[in-house]
Each structure stands twice: as structure tokens, then as C-alpha cells.
Length: 69
Image (cartoon, rainbow, N blue to C red; front, side, top):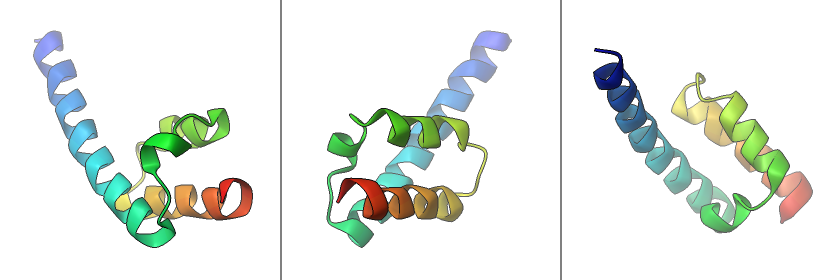
């Protein structure tokens, strides 16, 4: 049962990340994939997966605009 739950969470997270990446790239015109090479960007992403799609996107957009772009 744990494996099923873990796989379900991975699936939900991958869908969520797809939406976040789309919003992020639309707002910044930056590559989400390239920004993932930055450790702090990844820390923000990993530490805030419980946020809503919009809130997580905003955190990443704000960081990218201030530090990466």
C-alpha cells in the first residue's frame, strides 16, 4: 500500500510541476529546466511543494527575477 501511495504522490507532484513550469515560463520567459540547475531554486521548489500551484509559482518567479534573470 505504501508503494501505491508513493507512486500516487509522485504522479500528483509531476502534474503539479508541469503546471508550475508552465506558469513560470509564461511569466519569466526563462527556461524552468535551466533554472533547476540553481541549487537555491531547487531548495525553494523542494521545500514548498505543499503550497498551491500559484503560490509555488510566485515564489519561484520572484526568486528567478531577483537572482537568475
